[in-house]
Image (cartoon, rainbow, N blue to C red; front, side, top):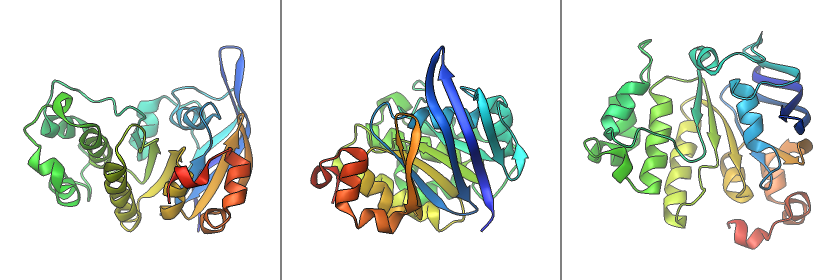
Length: 240
C-alpha cells in the first residue's frame, strides 16, 4: 500500500510553546488510521499542521508524494483533502442543502449531493432546515457530508464523538465505517480509543506532542492494559 499522507519529523509551535515534537506518521491509500491521545496531546495540532492552518516549524508533510509543508489550507483542500473539524463550524443561518452546495468544489466526482443524501438519509430529511437548528449529531453528519461533496481522497475527522449522546455516536461511527469501504482514506482524531479502533486499520498514540505508540489497531484494541497505560483511560468507560 502506497502512502497517501506522510508526516516526517513534524514540529509545530503555538507562539513560543512547542506542541508537536518530531511527529512522524503515514496514512495509506484507502486506509483508516486512528490518532489517539488525551486532551492537550497535540492531536488537533497535527491536523492543523497537515492542513497548513498552523504550519510546522520543522519536518515535512507530503501528500501523494508531493511536499505540501506549510501550504495554505485552500491549496491543500484542492489536492483532495477534506476536513471535518472539531465543533463542526458550519453556516448556521443556511439550510442543510445550502451548506452542502457551498462546499461543492465544481470539479465533479463520485460524491454528489444526491449520493451524500443516499449515504446520510437523515440529511435528506433535513435539507430545508437551517443548520443552527440541527442537533449535535445532525450537525456532525452535515459536517461529514460537507467534506464529502468536495470529493476528497483523504478525510481528516477531528473528535467526531465529542459532546454527542451514545446512540448518536454509534450512528456517526457507522457512517465512518461505511466510508471506509468506498475507498476514502481517513485519519481520525479521537479520545474514545475503543470507538476509533473498531474501524481503524492502524493506530498512533500521541502524548505531550510525541508519538509514543504505533501499530495495528486490532492488536491495540485487544490490549486494554496497554490502552490504559498509553492513554490513562478508564477503558470500561471509554466504550465497549
